[in-house]
Image 1 (cartoon, rainbow, N blue to C red):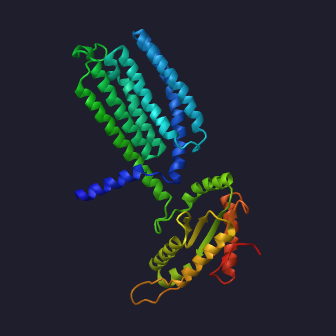
Image 2 (image 1 turned 180 degrees about the vertical axis):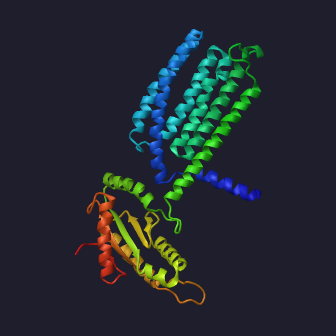
Image 3 (image 1 turned 90 degrees about the vertical axis):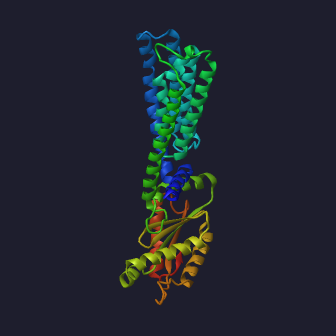
Length: 379
């Protein structure tokens, strides 16, 4: 049982530390923009705190420290908002903004500690900035950012606690009528709370990642599905436009798939699809993407010109035709084949729907010509 729990925890940690897939990155980019907008609103609201502090009889130093900190936070909040509007252009942005949120809290606490030691550790309103910084990482849908923010908060606050205790000449220096007594036990509890918030937020992100992964993955073949494709392909198009070259899409359809289901049952039909996928994966290059669209229809995305892609897909077609599918012991092997229609970006279309329509026309021509063939050009 302990090995099972340990194995599950390792898989959770590995998932959180892994780079999210394209759907998660796209959602995370929108989340970063949402965080930037929320940060800008909260930063504007923070401007009221120095005012309330002054009205409530707080010291002038505290008020000025609070005012200076909120002004800096507002300036940077507008900068992060401007960068977040250019979604996914800056891969470092989620980590930088999370580090800013945590470090801004630490700097304000340190400034408070300089003028009054207990204020640096017992200012609960400012300390809650750590919790907010960690919690907001959930909107980025990236476990790496959550863990980064949590560990950074623990390290910075731990160093701040050590620094304040080192500055105190006597226990009386850590006591205040306004902020109460600073004790090692209370500060340890706050560190534990930061760790708990990090773990809880990480679990929320992990759950979100699994749900999104399920929506972008085909349950039968474990291949990316159409949802994944619609999020990934625009990035590939942008890369080709920027770097030049071609991107070829091969629309592949298993011949007589409906007949296989009708004659042998859906269970064997599913197994025949997995057999086809195994061959396609084995014969295609690791840098290429294989996507299941529906039924027995797949899309192979290749970063190569049409002619080279045709040769590869036609070689895969011959391999599939030469490897019979074995239904089981004593059963007759099934000889499978597929038809395919190829289209290239950007020469034959600038968007996915147009390219798929053209590839489907060529796929239908391949089927009408007798199946088990690849068509790459219009007649």
